Image (cartoon, rainbow, N blue to C red; front, side):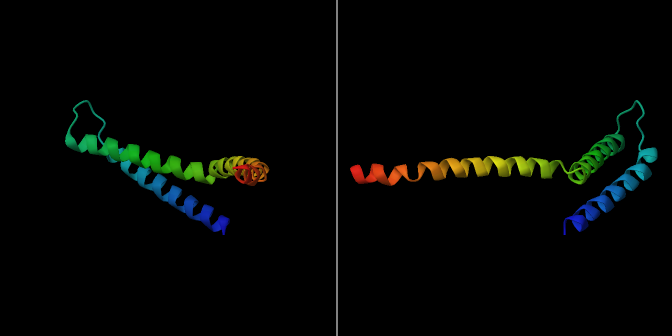
Length: 94
């Protein structure tokens, strides 16, 4: 299932790159800032953000972060389990 998920991100990345390559020559980056050129620049920035997000997912940065979070959760669970037998003893003393 993960391979199809990465395949989907590769397809979306290629589509975003194709749209960006098609649009960049048509965007005027000249010295006069018109509404059209400002829109083109903002659109290009969003396209780069989309490309960066798909690359981030394809390279597996999320998987490494998820593994680190799982290790932290496991350590916290072990600490909680070590404290668990102590709590009923305290409750009985009251």
